[in-house]
Image (cartoon, rainbow, N blue to C red):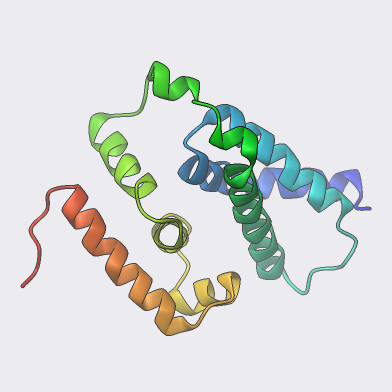
Length: 159
């Protein structure tokens, strides 16, 4: 089990990243907070040392994505409707909301690479390492995701 200082440092360092990943996947603040807690409890209980800070960051991102997917697959989740769908909460500026909705509307594989590339600043080879995929697969997913976003946001299609 990790020390309180280690956990506090990790929460301070990765809180924004975990919350953003959760919001992109779950589209729900309450579920985001649940997964946030789950991720850092897993971090607390994870005994193996990390090779570097990048390894630690990749582990946190992977655990977050997996926890979001587990929640989305749960029977409870499939049989409920979120409050946000019933009555939309106040959201950020219109253009940000539109882009966020377009990203959230992407298939999961594309959403992950778009988030990691554009929001977290990872390169395709780094994303391939985090997700355990081939680098060319990441490039393909980024290209396809850009096309889908272009369509969703009403941009001109090349060619």
